[in-house]
Length: 127
Image (cartoon, rainbow, N blue to C red):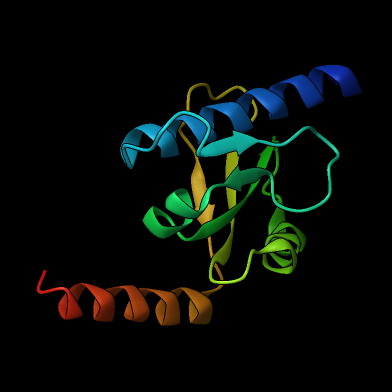
């Protein structure tokens, strides 16, 4: 099987990041520019989020588009790059799959703690 050129792989990864940013913007009814895909190879999170976006979706996203599961190393990267007040997560899409479909991976303990915090905020707001 022929290897994909690095430039093609980066283009596919960039497109997936942009699709993920668009999906978050649409699903949380955010303003254009509230979620922005960072240039490939930049340090930090893959999706820069405004304060309004972080309030709606307090997740620091690391996007991966690979044929194989990106594994624990990608989750460690997401956790390391997580913005304060958010939980690090890996959004992964297999090569060949299009659109914003994919999987999301969190650390189990961090996810449960994060979810409990969100549920407590909802109950405090009378939801």
